[in-house]
Length: 200
Image 1 (cartoon, rainbow, N blue to C red):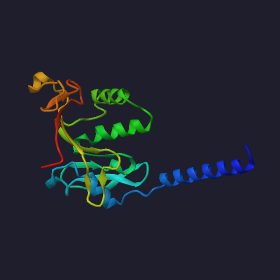
Image 2 (image 1 turned 60 degrees about the vertical axis):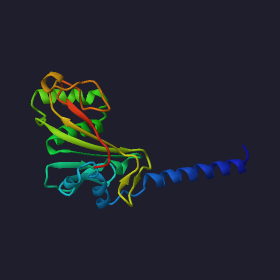
Image 3 (image 1 turned 180 degrees about the horizontal axis):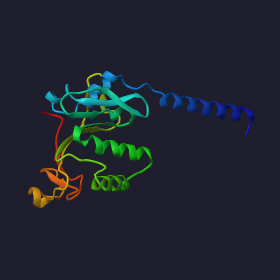
Image 4 (image 1 turned 135 degrees about the horizontal axis):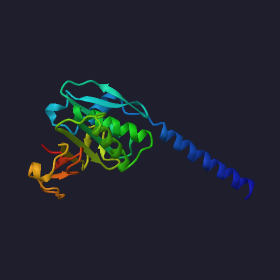
């Protein structure tokens, strides 16, 4: 390869590397923006009172706002390419926080639940008798920060009922797009899946 080609290759490599570095260092949304986005899954009347966890630096989830209504929302979209935020009743926080901790330690997939279920069985971890979780997800580029809206966003609402079975609740465990159904029946993370929309 000629010196001219080597120089060109080096320039391209440097330019790409610089662009990647710049992308990696893209500023996080402000705390106010993260709070506004994180509470989107909740019913309107519940948004102002929710605790919000988000990011002031990458890799560290911190409290951006302390709430008063027993709900916690996560501004997960701030460090993802796609859009995803979630809100849940505070009683789920130990279970959710333990999952985040295990994944940060390199535990993945079903192994996360294996650890949590064992800890629940010995009383090291607690689950509420029932609790609700709300999420909104969207493809990369679907979120408009100027209007705080998600184009074609998908809302999902689930109600955790640990240990519940189809027999104990009178609900099917067969997945459905038109009716609630019970996922992971008989386990500590059994929950009723409820489809939703972004409209009231």
